[in-house]
Image (cartoon, rainbow, N blue to C red):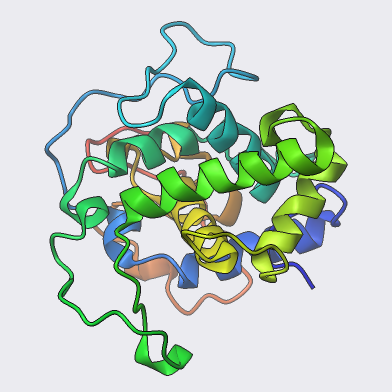
Length: 244
């Protein structure tokens, strides 16, 4: 069963997926602690965002940017339950992350030897996130061009889902980066972009937090702890004090 969210899933499935996703996102991504950028995000993708001043990617080129938008749109699509990854500015979040120490692998031990090992040993590749994205996108577009005579972004939504499912289950073999590794990187960063504090470029208008009823960076919400099943009555607040 695919772990990413398809528009074919029910509203309950979508909400359940998003709630479970929070547990897989580092708390630093949700609350946020890197305040190096104070510029509010404006937009995310070339396709569905109607607001002014579209975001210009810094790391991704035009073809890569088209892939990112098309892929995250299928991982968390908009539906009757609420906005999706595009509306939340997830592509902008991912692009901005590519210029952080994380994306450069600056905080990782990156000395050889690099050997394939069992999953419990953790990440063993010599590739940092920037490399995973650059090589992974090129590999997926190459596969789609060969198989469907189109890039990934040019495929219809059903075929995009098929390709993403093949990536997730490692049913496609690439030379430079494992398909499953690339998919896992993309899915994790999509989750992070949907639920991070807006200061990082994602979760625009706090749509991710509103979807799951997360209070955000409020100073105190202890009065509502242990009130199982009772919706939080106030909207979320961002680190910068933005409210919805």
